[in-house]
Length: 203
Image 1 (tube, rainbow, N blue to C red):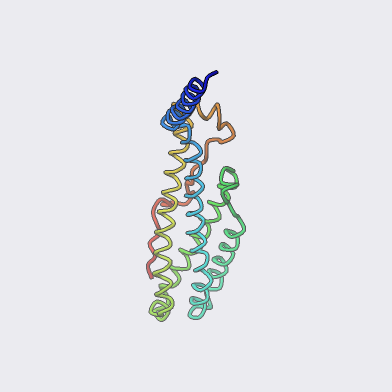
Image 2: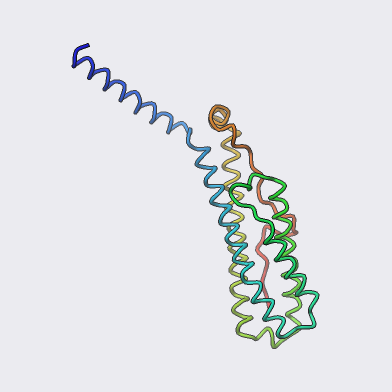
């Protein structure tokens, strides 16, 4: 084979590879792994915001305790609910486990309920409601509840996009050929009433 013919075939092969790469990229072959990573990133934000709330609770409990020690049952319920929620971890490697996700949801719902009862108790203590530390915690808790709502909404949207890609053409084809190890995912839907709305933190 002469040099010119060899160079011709080499250029043809390079052009073919580049064309195939462009066509495959344009037809969505990378959508499923991309959406998979987006789901994991969105879940990490959900975890971060719940952890942020958990970090506020010890200070909140201590502040309330200083003014309302007689509310021991309510304070204990919050502490226990926080401990239970902290004991159930769902990271990127276990977010595909529906049972684990359900346990996580239930634990967070229980913590939300315990916090709501604590905030109702605070209404009985005017001195507590005017405490500067308590007011600062109020603001931080309200902001965190809003962030939780946003993070959960983003996760639900990411799961919906991922599941839709697997179920529809051409993603369904790529899934059966290349990504059969990636399955449909459960969404994060709280079992608590009015869970789609961030709790109103009022003192």
